[in-house]
Structures are given as C-alpha cells and as structure tokens.
Amino acid sequence: MSVLGILRVTLTKDLRMEWRSKDAINSMLFFALLVVVIFSFSFDLTAEESRQIAGGLIWVALLFAAVVALNQTWARELRNQVLDAYRVSPAPAESLFMAKTIGNFLFVAVLELLMTPLFIVFYNLRSVGPVYQLVLASLLGNWALVVNGTFFGAMSIRTRSREVLLPLILFPISIPALLAMVGATTSTLTGEGSAHLPLVFLAVYDVVFTLVGLFLFETVLQAE
Amino acid sequence: MRSKFAIFALFTLALLSWGLYQALVGAPTEATMGPVQRIFYYHVPNAWVMELCFPLNFLASIIYLITRKPAVDAFAVATAEVGVVFCTVVLLTGPIWARPVWGIWWTWDARLTSTLVLWLIYIGYLMLRKLSTGGPNPVLAAAFAIFGCLDAVFVFMAIRWFRTQHPQPVFGGGANSGIDPRMMHAFLINMLAFTCYGAMLVWIRYTLERTRQKVDEAHAMKSLLHHEAGAK
Image (cartoon, rainbow over all chains, first blue to last red):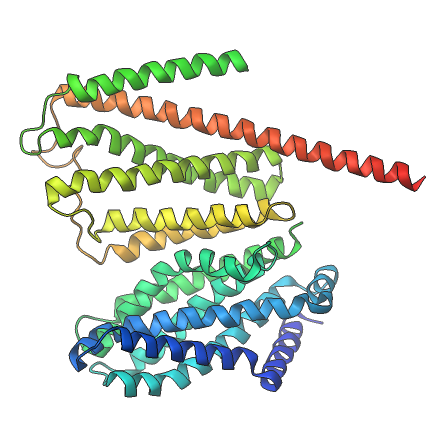
C-alpha cells in the first residue's frame, strides 16, 4: 500500500471510531464549555473588556480541550497492542503520524465550529475586522496545536505518567503559536493593529513543525 | 582523571573567589544605580553559561540521534540540567536588580519573557526524561530537545512584537556605551570564573550519568546471564 493509501485507511478508521463513540468530541466539547463558563464567572466583564480578552480565552479553552482528544488518539492504539503491530509492519510511520494529525485537526475544527456561537453569545462578540482572518487564524492555529500535540502524544504515551506528561511538554512549546493565535484573533475582533504578521508567523510555524514532526516521527515510534 | 578534576576544581574555586572580591571590592560603585548594580557581575555570567549550555544540549541531541552513543546522551543530560540551574539563577537575580532600578520585580519584556519560556521548555525536557526512566527515554528526550530549540527561535521572534524594557547592550553599543576599566576587569574575571564553574558542574554531572549508565548496563547483563543459566 502506498503512503497515501495507509494514511487514508488509518484516517477513515479513526473517523469511523469517533463517529460511533463520539468520545473525543463529547469530552472536548464539555470541557471547553466548562472553561468558558468558569472564566465568565471568574471575571465580570463589560462588552468592551470581553472583546479585548476573548481572543485569549478562546485559545486557552481550545488548548486545554485539545489535550483531551490528543491523549485519546494514542491511548486507543495501546489496546490490543495495535501500536506494536504498527511498529513491526513495513507501513511508513509518516502515514500514521499524518493520519492522526489530520484526524485531530478535524476533531478540533468541529469543536471550533460548535464553540464559536457559544462565545459570541456568552461574550457579546462582534468582529470589527474581516471575518476571513478569524477563519484563517482558527485553521492555522488548530494545525499548530494538533501537529505538535499529536507528536508529543506519541511520546508521552510511552512514559510512566502518560496523560499527565502531554500538557507539561506541549504547553511550553505552544507558547509562540499561542501568542500568534491570540494576536491575530484579538486584532481582528478589536480592529486594532494588523492580523497579517501573526498569520504569516503561524503559517511558518505550522510548516516548520510539520516537517520536523514528519522527519522525527519514525525515530520516536521505533524508540526502544 | 581524578587529579585533573581536582586541579580544575581548585582553579575554578580560586577564580570564583577572586571574581567575588573584584565584584564586591575591586570594581567602583556605579553612579546612578549604586551597589545593586554589582549583581551584574553575577547575573550576566550566569546568563552566558546558560546560553552556552542550551545550544550544546541541542548539538548533543542531534549527535545522539545519529550515533546513539550513551556518552553523548550523558552529555546532553548534563548540559540541560546545568543550563536549567543557571537559567533559574538568572531569573532570580534579575528581579532582585529590577526592583530598586526599574521599581518593579518583573515585566513582560522581550528578554525576560523569552528566558522564562526557555526555562519552561527545558523544565518540560527534564520532566520527560524523569518520567520515562528505563525504556525509550534518551531518544524521546533528544527529539524533544530538537523541538525545543527550534521553538526557542519562534519564541524570540514572537516576543519581539512587544516593546522591550531591558537595558540596551552595554558593550559595542553607541558612543555612550562601555564601562570603567575596573568594572570591565571584574566583569571579565567573573565571566571566566562562571564559565569554568559551569564546565565543572557539567563535568561532574556527566561523570555521574556515565556511572549510572554503566551500572544499568551491568545490571542488565547480569540478569541476562542469570536468565540464560536458568534456562539451561
């Protein structure tokens, strides 16, 4: 089977499993909802203030929620030694990595779609800048989170503490991406400053870390 | 080996003492900041050692992934741990200086923030190593170090968007930059002293890690032989 063939098969399998169980989506959605509600209880905000900080809030909620899905993607491959079977098979590791990343990207994209109306209602948001910038920021930001998250998930699943480790190594690495996502989102929502630079920054970040991930994944998968 | 280390340690100790004397007594008191400026002889050399350790860790990680030699991995652990210690000192001495001079303990300026993020990334690295004892830890750690170092570049760029409050470069700046020769003397002595001190700590940590690796190997070999003898 070709690289793309294996990618497609793995991705279809993950999507089908998710479609039947809805484990990742449900837990992410509920988690993100809790974060939003708790934040709005913690700070009593006016409409102007909430526009200033909403960009940060959205991404913090998504970052925390994404970890839930990222942990599950690899944990489900441990049952019945699927990951071990993959390691001894001649299938290219890059296909597995890409399939998992695309799968997580789709889950988080669904989450973003469902969360957006919620944010608009809870925080009285209205975009001052062009909306396509928000769409671009959520797509690029989503990829930045899941590409590193999928890679580190494959690392942390091999350690003693498993689920605990992923946020500890993912969050520090995600800080520059988070700065850019928040920058792009906030400047679009408030209409102050340009979203151009953070979006370009995010695109470069995505390309660099996708390449590094593809390059090193085989090594990490086969690590003894 | 042991006598070499003893000579080096004594040399470092002498340098550190001489550096401390120079920083506290030899160098003149700075005109506007007063005595608190003397922390500069401590803060900057520590930052320098940190800036040496992290790139060395990055190099060692790449070389480890290519050669898979345990000695290289031991060097990577040593530089990462010593780097984190020096980075911690930098993050602690900075606020002590900033409080009387800037009037605040901390500000989210470019250099402070990037140092803090670097510190967080390397704490993550040490966590990854710590939590994966046995099994695949050196390879995972080396891969993470490569991510971390690339990320550091993005961190510096991302944080440049904010205005910086850190002192402008003292050396090689404009016409008003540069310092009293006695200050320069104290500063250079301390730079040398702390570089030697950092090297000494890396040396100790490296030797310790090598010993641990050899003990582990010996244990593994023993249980393997034991297992084979039992099978016969």
